[in-house]
Image (tube, rainbow, N blue to C red):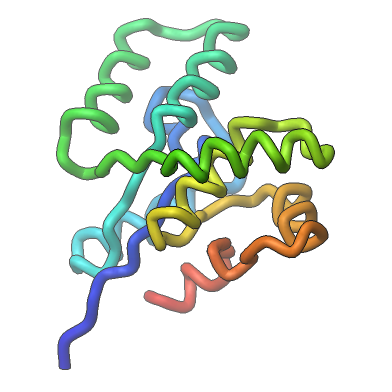
Amino acid sequence: MSYSPLEILLDTTYLLPILGVDVLGVEKVLRVLKELYEQDRVILFYSPFSLLEAIGRIAKMPHEADRVKKGLSAIIESGFFKIALPSLDGYLGALINRVKGFRDLIDLLLYMTARDNGIRFLTKDEELIEFVRSVGEDTNVFLGEEELETMR
């Protein structure tokens, strides 16, 4: 029986530890992702918007430049992650939803990127999920940590 690996766009929260920033409560999820990746059951994606958001957060705190550089290399150059970008309609959709009242443009761009590429979006952002639901957008794009855990 063959299967296609699940394609997953990671929210910034899951990339921060790779860049040297401790994030409470993501260690288990990162272990599950690594395990599934090693079994060829997932393909992991990142967005340059997440890297922008991460660098913005890191710039506001003490950090080791070498650690950040190693993390960026692991994300961008290692082959472990693939890059995902929104379509032109995705950019416009993010703008439209920003005007409708959701404040975090990067989160909207990440959602649109996953939606446009037909991949799942792993996020803890309940506010984003509720907003997407409230405006009638596709919430099937979202992947919860509990759903990921059932793949083990």
